[in-house]
Image 1 (cartoon, rainbow, N blue to C red):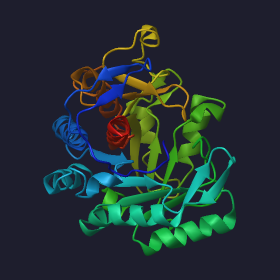
Image 2: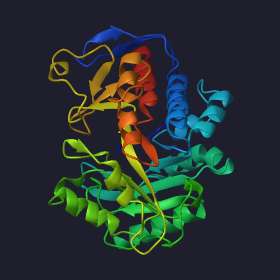
Image 3: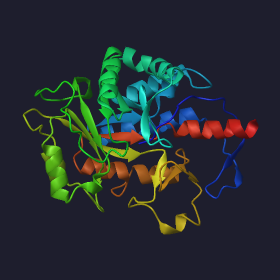
Image 4: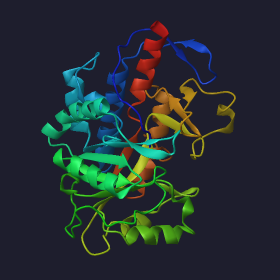
Length: 333
């Protein structure tokens, strides 16, 4: 999960920095269009493999706006491909250097609202995740997000590694057949603090969230179809949705697909390290070599998610397009 601004900048042909930090000639790529195409391809593929399989995107709010080369056609295609969208830090963000939560500056909050407006108008469920460290922050976050029609969650853990201590927002016992019915959700992406696999699963089963977003893996092994099925029942009744995390814009050194030699001899699709998250590297997401890791074979990431019986995939780092646009703009400046 990443935090930051998602503003589209002017694009053009320029130099990009490779994983080694040396300048390499950029490919001629329409970065917003390439990201939308990848998401649409993932949607078409997953729909064929498992009808009704959903996709939630994270970090791509700027792609809902027609600006700086992003077209209305792109926006329309994205709204059709996504079943929901998430934006982090709309009202409160985590300040890494200070080690605490702070209010998002007013200009960024307003930008998020403008970018998410087309999704709200189209009836796309909008999940808003704020990072807080005080009860009054959480209460303010829930109020502000609810006023905008977002599905809110205020997390006290930036690492997303523990269950919340409070009850779900707007808890209900109804069955969830689609994201449009979800009123609350929870994200837990790092289960390493749980004592065992069963303790982790049992903790998740004991919650009443309408939607769980979790990692495909516990340790080196993915969750089984039986384990995922056991998570789909809320503790006090009602079917819930369970989505699995998958990064489309970064490669992670702790994933099963990572090869040691890439650190010193990176493949052509690997870009710079993400200094904010250890073990993550930006990827040229339009390259077929990376996309083959994501989907299209039994060993591909999305295929593993589908095989494990998840209701959908949570696509992180959709804002990777902004990374490449900003690098081009920086080189040109």
